[in-house]
Image (cartoon, rainbow, N blue to C red; front, side, top):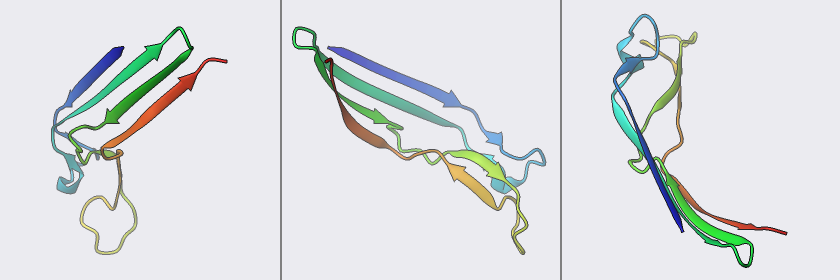
Length: 92
């Protein structure tokens, strides 16, 4: 059995060098965890994982674009929300 947990802290930052208020990403903590059971005798493992446990909305990419009437950034890509799943492996 193996358990892993990791977390990272990011301080406030602006996504655009002009420090447009709409490009500010607030500080956040993002954590991930997994738990895996290994059956080495039979060559398989089963695990569960969760990413972005806090379900933080984090701007990964912020950009400007020619959008009429837009104040500040007009484009932002968010990192994935909380995701979770199972993983099964089998050695042939």
